[in-house]
Image (cartoon, rainbow, N blue to C red; front, side, top):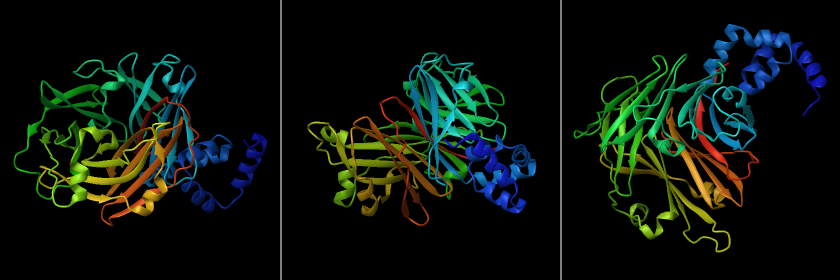
Amino acid sequence: MENPRNLSTNSIGFCLLPSELIHRILLNLLIPEILCLKSLNKSLSDLISDQHFVRYYNSRSKSTTWLFVYKKRWHRDAVLHGFSNQSDRWFKLQIVNLLKPLISPGESIYFLTASGDVFLFSSNTRKAVIAVNLSAKTVKRIPPSPLGPRGTSSWRRSGMKLVSGSNSFRFLFAELVENRPVLFVYTSETDKWLSMEARENFAGLPRGFQREDDYIFLNVVNGPYESVVMMAGFESDDAPVVVRPRFEGGGDDEQQLTVGYSWGNVIDRLYVHGDGHMLIIKSNGVGDADTGARMLNGIELWALGSSGGQWERNSKVPSRIMEEIMKPYRVIMGCLERRDGVIRAVLLSNCEVLWDIIWLSYDINRCYWTLIPVPNCNMKGLNMAGIAFSSGLTL
């Protein structure tokens, strides 16, 4: 780390630059970098704290996508690692001090999801959900849902969604209750839960519906031949709708191979769901006799069909990208989101106690795949405790 005296001297020199240039430089920095500058010099602190600068910076930061990985260092502290698609390095966000009022040292917690400045964690010991607001530096325990206290294993990533606003947030999750799909919604403004039973959708999806603008998609059941997907209005309080897309097989051999589901081979495919889409990650199905490692050999993107009655294959990751990401793995997990017409997916794999991260992006309108370069995160061990995308971090 650079000598603090040198940092202070450099910040003074930075302040001597023309104000227009300083503004331009600051607007191209990420929030962790700006906060570091803010703590070094009063002139910079005053500039960064100016409300006109804050509003303009926050309006631009909405387009920045962050990937957050939570790694619990048992009996020591909690570290949230953040990487942006506009940076070339990882940032460490120390959240242990924020969690101290509610979490004992060494307590087992899991990172559930994030939206804007709000991050949700689940405590396995207390069976509670904890909301952390990084911007406001506040932490609170969310009241138990109508289903009662829940441990970390009860939460399914594809069955929940966090939606944050300027001063509030909503946490939604879907579950089967007595074999009926039910939506549970917590609103921070009222500090209360609302539950709604979903109705079956027999007429097909609404004509001309816009997935990311009008609906939130939550996976209730991810079955081998049929899924149960809940559609909740993004702003509406109307009862959610359930669709049951099936894998129909179909025309070509490759499509039939993907959806055939040989149960003896099921370990060779991983399914990552999110926002009305699904990734199917396929391996070579052989495995290394000594390490048990497998090798990625294909990734396909599927989407909910326009009728809601079946999954339809949209695209597959091209060979030029597969050649770069074809690495051995023993354990693999992932998450997927759709926002602003782009599918973002991350795969977190482990081989010989070393974690590797693959970030894929698919532009729906251009039908184009991109591999986002992710620097080495230098994470070892098996105590990975959550991963999620987010956007809209604010000053």
